[in-house]
Length: 123
Image 1: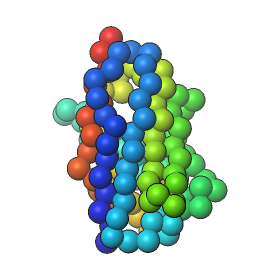
Image 2: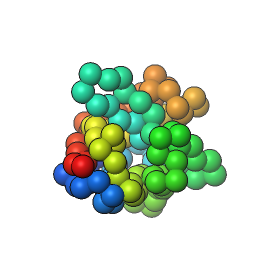
Image 3: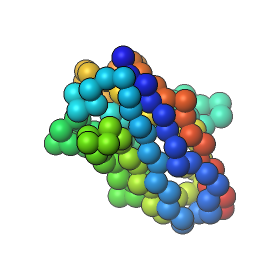
């Protein structure tokens, strides 16, 4: 299995940008598909973005399309989420997930998760 640690969250104003990082250890990172999910209080964990191990495929939730960009650096065993034009509704705990499988828009497909990093956007 793989251990994941998210970082980069914080308190920002609407319209600002933030870059989240997820560092992986314990398993060969290049063989993992990675995803970002978020969870707001009282809501289910929802899909944000995903990327395959080779970066040949990326997927975004409609709510973040055009504003967020997922990328990865396999040499650093790290996946990133660049978040631009942040909105108050982006406020949530953001989680990084890893899987060797498919169905990357579903949280149940991911077997490993980080502890999450809080993103708070004030309007």
